[in-house]
Length: 332
Ligand code: AMP
Ligand code: MN
Ligand code: MN
Image (cartoon, rainbow, N blue to C red; front, side):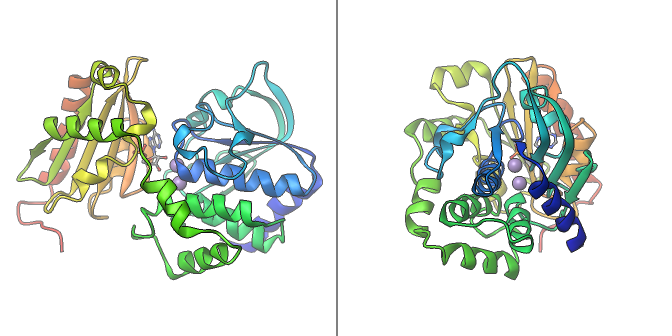
């Protein structure tokens, strides 16, 4: 992607005063960390910033520097010079943060999702980036925007979580170079990693126990899935954020190509999370058939219907895709 796009965004950031920085519903570390990092940089520039997300700051990420800046969108809606959507594949994934912006002269869209159609007045989409935070880092550096340790810590947390701790395929030498530069600001990597990965509530493990009890394998173990009903979630007392990443246990099983997690939501829909181990099976394409999107190896959708209905419909599509590979297809 050209530097001229960064120059255009840099100019817009410098020339305006009031900013809304938004991220997707059910935020993850990349959305939250990217939002906070960009907001902190703009604050140092003297800008007025609002940092909104439908769900507000999650308890599990509340240790991020200046986490309290990030809130649920208030009522009534507000007017801005510039609204910036981060890490958000389609605009309606901004949820209630979208109508909270009554007006904005310019909409900027910065993201790394393959399926992002490039909505907004200025879009910077780089699907080769392993995290939106990597693009934010490059923007800050190339436009010489304010940078400090708090910003670095938010970016590090975002990149670490979206790369599965620097393991997923899009993790590059450049990602490690960025990480090195972030760490040089004085980040305590051990402490931060512990807060990110080794500090979860006991109920998360109790949820995992339940999911492992109901997990199923299909098509010679190449498709793995589990589902969570509202009733079970309620009985276990789990929060939505508790299930982030549990699907990785399914994907990690030898022979599994596609892993699927189904979560019943209170609005009559089911949230589907899908992971693939190979680009040969593009789960973004499968999820797009159901109105969702994401990346080739990690995608999702929200589908109307009961948990069993959605499970059947989606697994039929996944199994058909796996069958089309032929029975000899095994992972290298
Ligand atoms: P998740 O399984 O929720 O971790 O999401 C995996 C990837 O797919 C993330 O990059 C999401 O942003 C994207 N994604 C999840 N759900 C949707 C959806 N309903 N529409 C578009 N993209 C989605
Ligand atoms: Mn995200
Ligand atoms: Mn991301």
